[in-house]
Image (cartoon, rainbow, N blue to C red; front, side, top):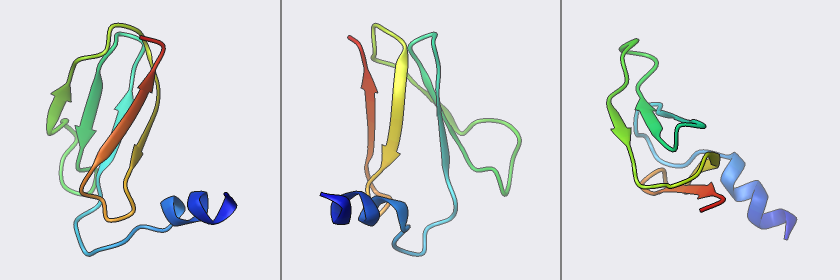
Length: 68
């Protein structure tokens, strides 16, 4: 099980750095911190606060967790 979690801690690929912030207003924001101070986009869909967000190891997918 620890090997699986270790794979998520090491970024894969050559895509630019991205950051996602989850919030208690049920939304997430996607950021490109190296290039801009404004978010790239607002992600909606949860009906409860966002507890955790993770990128897949290849950085193509984003998973979010909530109590909804």
